[in-house]
Image 1 (cartoon, helix red, strand yellow):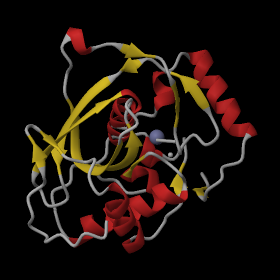
Image 2 (tube, rainbow, N blue to C red):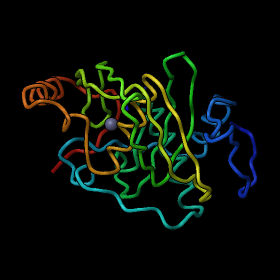
Image 3 (tube, rainbow, N blue to C red):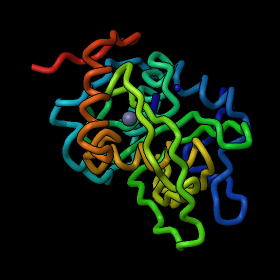
Length: 215
Ligand code: ZN
């Protein structure tokens, strides 16, 4: 979505605080370690087929997957994003990364493989209609109502089950990135008029990061 050099052994279990993974500690170091190992890749934009279909489930939790996560962090940093899905760098796999603040200004850094959003009970479905943007719809923004709370379940790059909880802007990010991996952009959730307006904003703007030209 538009915004550590701790050596960890490969089989280390994810840190859990109760039900949810701890993604608020050592953010600076973890984000830097990923992006310094990775290679930044250009971003796919609306119209590229890889963005408009469901990505494949990840079944191999190997070095290649770890390299993909590193490349995604590097690409996310180049594009100054707060979240990035694998198909946004042209890879047809269910993985997203994030580096995003929640509604209390707390930074969250992490990745999720094969994410699935929890259905929220009615009392947690409080809609927030803040602005949303997407690196794959460069320079456009639109207001979009989404629940201000989200839980995503999936795996980490080692295949360990994880759950991530988000509030505010971070909740929006978790929903936005999961949508990507099922073939949906945020503009697909807008009214016809707002979608058209977002595409107009995109056609009039110039992305500040490398993008993959559509044929
Ligand atoms: Zn996006």
